[in-house]
Image 1 (cartoon, rainbow, N blue to C red):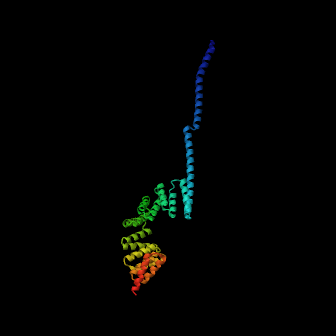
Image 2: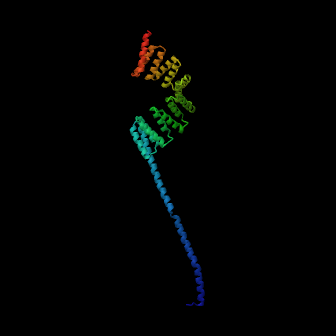
Length: 328
C-alpha cells in the first residue's frame, strides 16, 4: 500500500528517528543490565574466595583445637610436677604420659618422667626418657645434664662426658656445666682435662664454690699440694661448714707431713659432722703417724660406732692397741 506523500515524509522521518533511537535505547538498556550484573557479581564471592574463606575457617578451627590440646597437655604436666614434689612419682609419671599423648613432642614432660623413674631406681627407663627429651628438643640442656648425671652414677663415664658436652654445646656460658664435665674427666682418671674444665668454669665465674673445691681435690690428687691447700682454704672461707672441704684439706696437710694441722682440720670437721665415719677413721690414721696411739684408739672406736662393719678400721684399731701395749 502506497502512503500519501505527506505521510510518507513523516513516516520516513518517524522511522528514521526510531531507527536511531532504537539502537541507542537498546544499548543503554544493555549497559544498564551489564552494570547491574557487574555490581551483583562484585558483591557475590567468587569460587576462589569461597574456597579461601572455607580454608581459613578450617585452619581457624584446627588452630583453636591445637591451642586447646596444648592447654590440656600443660595442665597434665603441671599436675605431674605437683605430684613429683609430693613424692608421688608413679602418679607423676601417669600425668606426664598423658601430657605427651596430647603433645607428642613435649620435651619437658619426657625429662620429668626420667627424673621420676630415676627416683624410683628404674635407671634404664630414666635414660630412655632423657634421650627422648633431647630428641624432641635438641637444645634442652636439662635433658643432657640429667643424662650425664645418671651415666656418672652408673659408672658409664664416656657416655657421661658426651652428655655433659651436649650441655656446653648449647649453653657455653654455663659455668657449672664445665664443673660437671671436669668431674667426669676426674672419675675417668683424666686429671689434666678435669683441671682444664674447672679453670674454664672459674674464668666464667671466679666465685663458683664447687669449681674451687673440685680443682682443689684434683690438685691434691696430682700432688700439687700447695695449690690444693690454697683452693680448699678459699672454699672453707666461703663455706665454713663444708665438711668435705675440711676433710680434703686435712688430707693435703697430711700429704705434706703437716700432721698437727691435719689433726686440727679433722677435729674441726668432726665437730661439723659428728656422724661422719671417714673423718674419725682419718683422724685415727693421723694420730698413728704421730705415735699417739691412745688418741688413735679413741678415734677408731668412734669410727666403728658409726660404721661397725668397717674391716679396715677394725684392723687399724688392733694395730694401735698392739703398739700402745709395746710402748708401755
